[in-house]
Image (cartoon, rainbow, N blue to C red; front, side):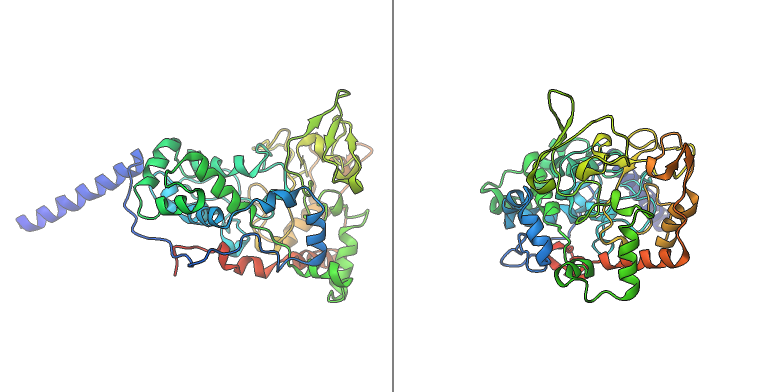
Length: 410
């Protein structure tokens, strides 16, 4: 009987200790070590990129950024990305909410943080992040370097509010001093070293080998009739998809990673790789959907817009119900959709635009006509064709690429 009571008391005490660890952020031991190749993967490899994409990429300012990626630094970033030690209680990693098989998005509408609490927004896919200047659903971050530390320090997501404590924690591991030495020539673990490594790993995540990409190289010879029809619908004045999701990255901003700059006349200046190398000036007062050079007018709203999801938004996004226009690449894999994950299928997404746009006071003007809502009213054939085209944006080589995989799994 005494032995039973002792065992019961011990179990209760252990539970209390573990609960205390979760509350205070004490370290819960984690024995896993990363398994890495003798020679690091090539994080600058472009062998899977389509010819057209590579040419477009090389003609942009991004090439110089991509050339700076170091394989050892990106390898460190890969380990950091998958390591639950980056959360305050060793329960959550970056990859917990950004899964490779889902194009580094989450399969749930909302994501579970380090204490089991849920985030308030859907985890956006991490794809071609270095090609998008405004990040997160509210476009609050303007560089990948700024992006990568936000989840670590978030009170719900990973809870590591003190980066000094994180560097001390990682210094006590068996593998981080060696990885930092390979990456930077010093085994001293620093906040900047963590930030740069995570950023380089994320910047190396470039998806450019979809059926669409190959189609650009061979005049879409492999597209079937529905896919070709869908591409026509996507680019049509009726559907208006291409006015927000600009090729080749299918976002509001393709190949931008800089904050907008203003000239003395208070006009928005975009880098000169747009419009065949010509400078584009856009009046910052232009509303979304009203044109404006290569940006479709979205530069004035940090690449966000209001698509009429609600008449009254519980979450205002950037402001007035405006949320970032995400990339459509790999969209077949990134359900559920929208900032709150409200749509489970592409069919639901297309149906929203076709019939269910709500009359919000700040609705994107492309959905308005003489002050009233004007849904797209696509036919059933147009809807099916559009979805068929969207599925050509899936890049299976990207989601299977070992250099982006979990190093803590054999």
